[in-house]
Image (cartoon, each protein chain N blue to C red):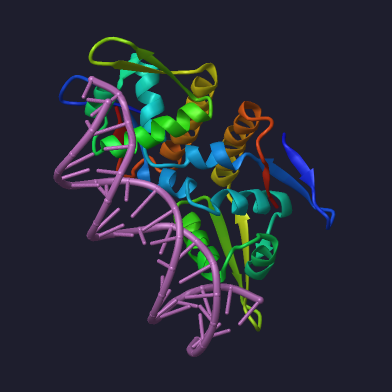
Length: 118
Length: 118
DNA sequence: CTGTATCCCGGACGATACTG
DNA sequence: CAGTATCGTCCGGGATACAG
């Protein structure tokens, strides 16, 4: 487990802010679940599948995810251009870990109102 | 795994927004790691241990965590009043799942700048 | 089709002061 | 000591328009 020793002698847990913050952003898990379910997807397909997601939000989030090695992006040189997004191996690991957390949430509050990803 | 079937025939992943959103809030993991490390803690101790955390933020977060069964709160009727916070069993499960995610983040970006919890 | 550019708004969080 | 109240700020994200 990632640790560090501070000046005052405290043993602390280290983390990578860039990726961890990304994980906590609004549509990240929706996107990962979607890509895991359908494999390669186009921008517009993802837009249609996720409720409330705007082009802007999807664009920003996919860029962040790609830069952090969670999502892979392939551009097909057709006319008009097509772009295919898919999960990397790391992305699948992150997605699975997030779903464990999700399932724990459900176990703790079995009677609470539920929402869903698609 | 929590699932639901939508009108259009899609099989979806369900989740509990109340707890999951709480998990993504800024100081949640810091608080859980701290309580796991020290056991029962007082309000002011926690305030001193977590960099940048204000009374307001800690107050709100602890209340949310208590309402969702993640943190236990005991009030000691002394003068002045003392309050002890600790993790519930569910809280410890959530904390462990979050640390797995954290560790995955570190593995994916080994060279990235690191921050720490205490 | 796949984005980017602008503008705007609400909610989360920081700072500070005050109370039982 | 353990909070609550109030105010201000900043950023994520929604709406819309536009570009390659």
